Length: 169
Image 1 (cartoon, rainbow, N blue to C red):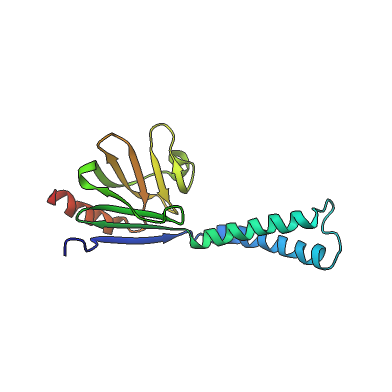
Image 2 (cartoon, one colour):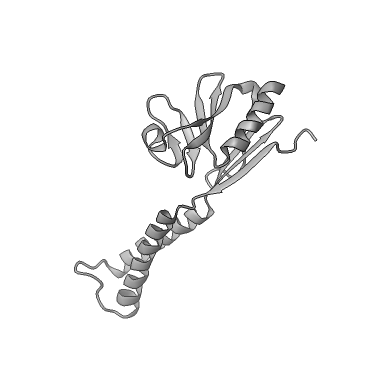
């Protein structure tokens, strides 16, 4: 079949330290909610109002839920590269081979090139990056010389796929 995936990968934010930070912050606000809003005692030396605790606590829970559902999905087919950073992108973004000048797997420095992980814009012409962890990615250079880097946890499998496609094109 022409549209069968040649490569597929789904990544999530799974770093333990991110979850530790989020759970600690959630724990602090859950404690503040219980002590101050439910029990009526002030929480801390400079307590927030009850409304502020509810609003900020809700925001923290929302961010935690967002991190739980964030995923980077990459699919390579004979007709192009499909990528989606859910829930930022609801539908897959398709990049057809005729719009791509060059594609290759490379090592990169997420901090110095893109300022970290996530949906990022690089400095000094590095282009956009979609990544969730690690330092390996699929570098795409488009015909108009714009760039997109898609992070991967399967660099050798991705390199094999790209080599097959490059020889077929």
